[in-house]
Length: 157
Image (cartoon, rainbow, N blue to C red; front, side, top):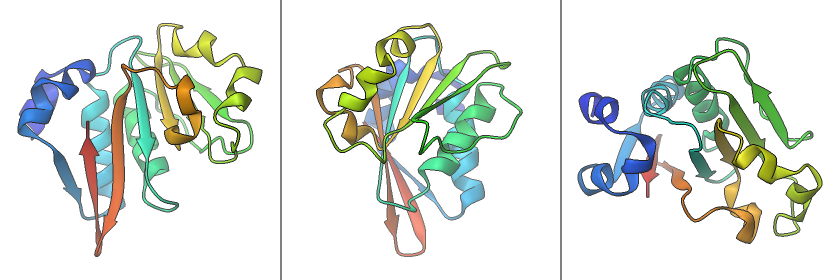
């Protein structure tokens, strides 16, 4: 898994990697962090990562590992009340969205000028991405985190 993730870019995950790697099992928050960190090592400017999964599935832990993978060393928290946090100082700027509080099909995103961030040249990671509705770009890499017994299954499509 590690060598595959290190060779691929995030945009190619949909085509090349998904043929070989449809899901990854995480047995702990540390595993989820590490998987996200490795995944982010291949992120490129303009990538949009759409995270879905039920409450407590591990989306924020994934976001924390992803931030570390793009080189951000600071504290990463879920922007549930502010909708977005910006993390700078790594090799890429990370725009971290949390849409948990949105119930209007993404209209709340328009109020913060989401397009300015989606196309700013950094990487966007969106928790609760399904709440963006039609505003989510078609080229977004979808990652679903599901609880399965005492583990998590992280699926990429």
